[in-house]
Image 1: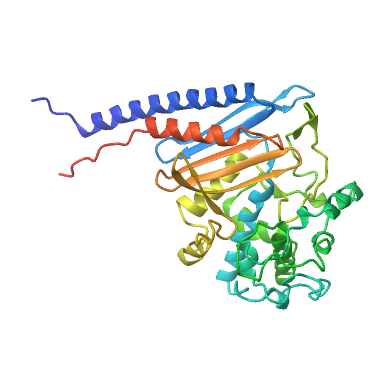
Image 2: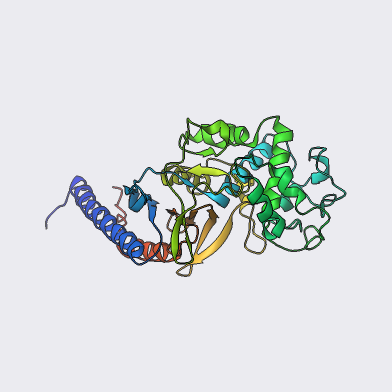
Amino acid sequence: MIKVSRSMIYLCLFLITSLVFATCLERFKTILSKTLESSSTRGAVVLVSSPELGTLVFASGFADKGKQIKMQEGNNFRIASMSKTFLAVTLLKLAEQNKINLDAKIMDLLPQDIDLNRLPNGKTATVRQLMQMRSGIPNYTNYEEFYTLVDNMVDKRWTPEKCIEVIYDEKPSFAAGGSYEYSNTNYLLLQLIVEKLTGKSYAAAIDEQVLQPLHLNNTFVETPEAQPANELTTHGYHLDGGIVRDVTFYNDGFGMADSGMVSTAADLNVFIQALLRDKTLLTPESLAAMLTLKDDYGLGIYREEVNHQPAWTHNGDSSGFQGQYYYFAREKLIIVVLTNDYSSEIIEGVVSKTLSIYQSMTVRAPELETQ
């Protein structure tokens, strides 16, 4: 009978895992490159992270099509509504510090220049209802006046107040807490609440509560103050009438809390890992509150199924960019897809194929007897 040492077993497992790692990387790269070839999306970065595989990052296509600059793994992107998860975490951390009650009415927390008499449900909605899209306050981006505002805001700085005025005197979508409706207005109101509460910009609050503790040095709110230390390294595109147009500088609300952040796939991975895999960013009570769903939406995060597997996620699209992060709790798997195409159609397919490959190729070490 041949006796196999424990070290020999570990060496075999290491070699198998290394082979799986290399094979997965090539298959993932192929998925992305072939998907881009058959789409109008100019470029993308995909990150896959799990305890078994470690972290794989790969890029394809162009960061700047006009100058033929290829996409790199470290390129940053506008993450648009994925920014909402960062603000939600910031609010939960402030609640942990007893600086805010999430069930407090917003009328007691908003600055005086917000006219509560004209704000739908302004006197009844709570902070938690804003975070969970259950305030009944209409979405300012659904109104024609918003697009008129876009035309008038060229070379000007956006403020939440200007956008909130768009929905003044409108009827609420429903009574506060009575239903669900995705509304960007909710997170602009949360921005103002955080700024009044902390006496700082919401960008500074997120930096203090999230970015600095996690050393997310490549993540920032896109405001004039962020330049030139932080710059957008990727151009954004949009397919318009069959023509791919560079819309990088089309200002549809830069720097506001509903969609104002820039990040990299690597930084998003660190954030999601700390929040959902390692569970070190929030207390267990705060995380449970964040992941308590109503109509499949929690606090700045929601649930979606991919290949019949549930994932925690949030998407985002803005001025030439579209992306989404996913966390599959059963597999402890993080997938991040960032594209520089406002109307990109590749994300769902890339994630579905990536998940399938991961599930088919993951090797788990057998249990070793302890003797």
